[in-house]
Image 1 (cartoon, helix red, strand yellow):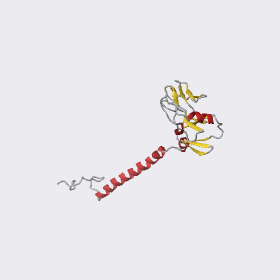
Image 2 (cartoon, rainbow, N blue to C red):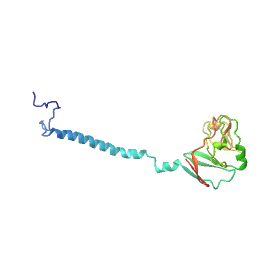
Image 3 (tube, rainbow, N blue to C red):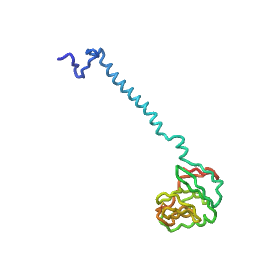
Image 4 (cartoon, helix red, strand yellow):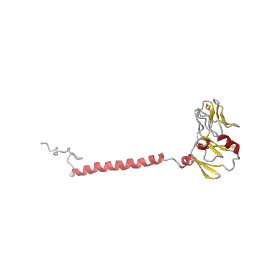
Length: 181
Ligand code: FES
């Protein structure tokens, strides 16, 4: 049998063609290299994982705080939330009363299910047809793109829009402030 063979194992040859004095050392080196590679990959992945976290800037834009104290009854204010317009309507008594009845439309919904307080309507200002921004009218909103009309609850009255204006997630953080998002 050749001297190069080690029974049941791979032949191990040293730098100068001789067997290393301690073959186990090679196993350790191989394992250590594997561990070191693992640590290296882990360390390299950390900045990558960190970069996947949303930045403080993005987090701050995830919500929009709006001071509603300056919106008079009957007036609307448009604010931006996550790059979208949001309509905030401070409804007066007549508007609240007019919305109490649910119109027979393609997307019937009670006004009470669309607001947290009767005097405040908060809706995303994008037409549910193809996303144009509707204009404020005396009766609600009208989308000039293809003629969809919405009432003071943001409910579709007529036109090609398939559903009511969307209500974003929001909460009253005080009587004068809402947090959208
Ligand atoms: S996008 Fe508003 S009616 Fe078409």
